[in-house]
Length: 252
Picture 1 (cartoon, helix red, strand yellow):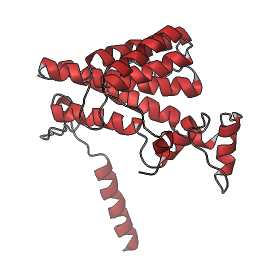
Picture 2 (tube, one colour):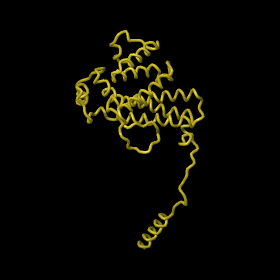
Picture 3 (cartoon, helix red, strand yellow):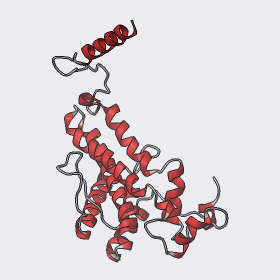
Picture 4 (tube, helix red, strand yellow):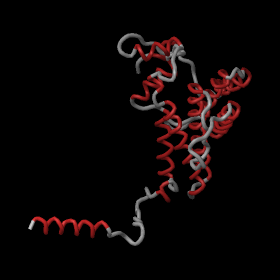
């Protein structure tokens, strides 16, 4: 009896295992989140762009990693003692290497932002958008791509350069220094020229682009270009110095 039952189960299993569809299952997606139409809407474009903003702003633990990585070496912040001392000492003393714990994620985060920006730029022509919307989104996207490339450059030098969401190979060689720097300047300058002076809260502005370019030119020792960007920020009338320097570092 047991043998008959076992043989029956085996027969049923084998019979089912040889059943299949005549052609691949194609599911109809009725939501606007369908891949073919999500990025044809303003909501879709803004969602992907906002994700790039979120990555650039380094939320959660990434915030502390970014602060300690970019601001500890410059002296903008200072911290000692506790378990974090092991991570922060190399940052203060300029002795870090590729094992530095606070570098964790900076390469990946920057390329994630670049990926989202490229998706936005590639898909803008596919939607029925008014010219002003395309102009504004393009400027914001180029701002974020240039800022992400600056972050990579500050920490690692150049990297593989991706300017589109479609590419032939995942493995690309590092761009040359000249190529990388030229792309940053091109993107940020074009963004600066089209960004508003007073954007929505949390969005990129023309003044922010000029300020970032000023600092970038300073690091490149391009003094005249840095001066021109500094003058643009000062003459914009959108910014003031803190009356007391220490207030910059006060707890909000």
